[in-house]
Length: 354
Image (cartoon, rainbow, N blue to C red; front, side, top):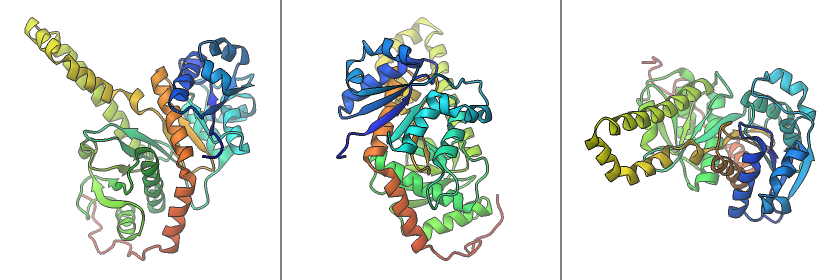
């Protein structure tokens, strides 16, 4: 980019607050030396951390915010206080063009409500979607929506597919992402009418993706699909189930290795592989969900993210800005609308869901 990207940081958000966010910004700056920051939060608390973060200190503007959104705050109440909070002021900086993206580890509901109200949706997008990376046996996959929309119609799913493919091209570097709709089966006759019509449209459309049809939940981890598209209710359940399964496997392995001296010996022999597995499943290595479809970039970090995890979220924001994802999405949507396929209501398939 001709102008160094500016990232607004909600320094007060998340469990770790200023200590984690400022340290993460320092790590991110090592990887992206042209980054500059706008730090929103309590000025005294921020300055107290800058002595350990010389790169941030030299490339940041501190903007004092007198108020903070707590994890217990209701979104409606948070929106009313947005103008004086570190979260709300950071989003406002994106709208004003003072920053190209904003990153927060704060209250997800409040962040979503503020972002939608302040930035609004892009032309051609009915609803924004929350997208994130999920580890698989191969490379990471993009999953959306993860909770922004409980119910979705055909148009929403098609728009999510377009945005998810743009995300995969930008962050994963996949030139022509493989896209699939999450369903109860891979057969074309299965699923709701909304899913089947969305599949028919994506199958017939000329988009920079390879539409792979439907994918079942047990195939997500195989890594054969780059972008998995679903409604927010199903996507959130799938994400939490995957995270819980990862913890279950780790817990069972730990119990097994402690069960006898022989299994403890087995642990010593295999601990290198087990550490590699733990790193691959670590949520911090995939941290940084994005609200796609807004007139501005907002990245959500896990509230309990480590310094490394928060740095990864900042890196996601940088990559999306550098890759000009908003232009990619707008271009793909314009192309789809201009050459929208004519598809029958059931595309000639049995309309019975299994």
